[in-house]
Length: 506
Image (cartoon, rainbow, N blue to C red; front, side):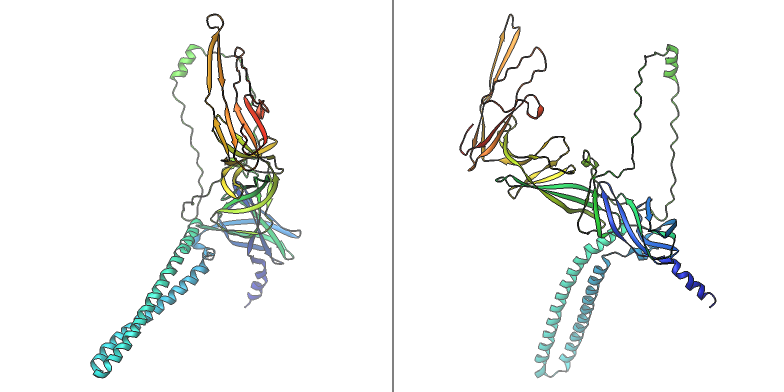
């Protein structure tokens, strides 16, 4: 009894707090998780249990408001069997409800078996003691009751099989989550506060990431292009992100934060070694192999192989500036999610729709949407292409190319007929004893518009370009091309014929 007041005085000093994940900043190859924990006035210690063992302990940061003094932090990693409270799964409630229903069905099946046994015993006993006039009625009653019982048993067994089908994936997912989180961490923080306060804890994890993707919807009649931003988020951190603020960053979360100085470019005259020195060097014994240094790490509990994680291609963000996208609403992303598709908004753009023909490549026309490069950050990623509501394929969106305009292909245009004429070649020698060789090539092609509306036609042809001063090239084109150095590449000849009317041929 003398120690009771002392225990009551020390009880408020220890706060076994509950924390929640409030915000997550996801990088292409990792994430920074921010937790919030509330401590009571007069608390001397904060203890948090059931934290994932996958976070980087060296990245832990704890911030507190003014008036709260923070002391040392102790982190302990426990095997799963030593933390039974942390082993609870969010699937446990669903599994328990299904198991309760299955147990009730099993109990009813047992009761029906008992009833059938009684009917069999009763029937055999009455058959010996029942008058002949009453045997028929008793037999009919026993038969009907037994028939109803057997029908009910068959119905219950079907329900039991259906419950087993529902339980199997839930139990398998629970076992997978358990094997994926063989350890838990507890955090113990010494502190001093005179009033209630909210602490913020942040740490880094590598078992998460995101990759950009896009969806382009083109209206070929008006040229309206709706470009949607999407994000594919994956996380296997061992803890669920429930009702969190989610931000996505294009920055690279790597340990390398700077560059080493370039090595000087030293030039010197070659000094050959003396012959005897070369011989001694040739027959000198090989140097001993360098000693391999190893570090010993103490691990508590058994070593369990990590599950295969979803990898992200970090090069997908090369060439784009670091930008953050913040979702307007809180989201839920459970641990183990392979791909969660999130919408980041859309831009309404105006494009010039044209049909491009490259006769040397293929006798066909393909639709292209030509538009001004959109403003803002557009990390390199896959874009789905929909033309007039129909999916035609996908390509890679790469805005950071330095070009002022952006082109997106939208599949083959079967409304244009392209016909290639046979190529004509003429060769000859001129000058004394064949001092000069001459080659003449003639190419022609026919494009017919079978659409009900006019189209803008582009034709791209490759012309020869001399790479030596003794080679002379003379090219004649009919009609005159728009440019003979398309995209600043000599030899790429471009014709642009705007608003080619239906039925016209060129």
